[in-house]
Amino acid sequence: MDTSRIKGLYAIADSGFNPCESLPKLAAKYLAGGCKLLQLRIKSKNGRSALWNDDAFEAAREIMKLKKSFDFTFIVNDYVDVAAEVRADGVHVGANDMHVRDVRGYAGDRLIIGYSSHSLEEAVAAERAGADYVALGAVYHTATKGYGHPVAGIETLRRAAQTLKVPVVAIGGIKRENYDEVFAAGASAAAMITSLTKANDITAETKWFVENRSA
Image (cartoon, rainbow, N blue to C red; front, top):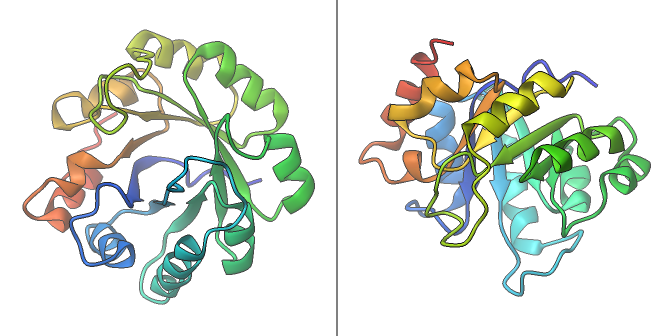
């Protein structure tokens, strides 16, 4: 599986933090800013894991149309059937979703598989299970997850990057002030939501992060 494009800014179009009319419109702003790695994230209202979500399917289908204008890698969070149906590049799962081994059995090598981890041990287990990349977080405190969410910290990120052979994606509380730090710690990519969506000009802010990775 080619994971060479799991790098740089990893922008997440999240249903809970979307100031635009729709998630495809938010995705288009990210892409206009030069983002090459994009995730669609629509969490179910009851918090339960599922393979399918009609809203995610419609949004994913519209985002796939943007490939006519932009070159980017598209990952769907949670919904394996949606990712397969729209022919997305990958799917991202966590502890409450379909197990990585089961996703691989279902999709074979058609999808890049990412996994959300919160510790070095969980990250290592995800790699052993067959994840193509592992997200680790929260690296810093983040309003996206709220109070009580575990904070892995920059040193855990550094250890994960040194230990794992697959790309490690830093997530949680990343902003301009610490953007370079996560790459210096060995992260291949930095996943972001609110640092982009709270900007007055989302496209311009995206462009800043695309152009200012120095490590």
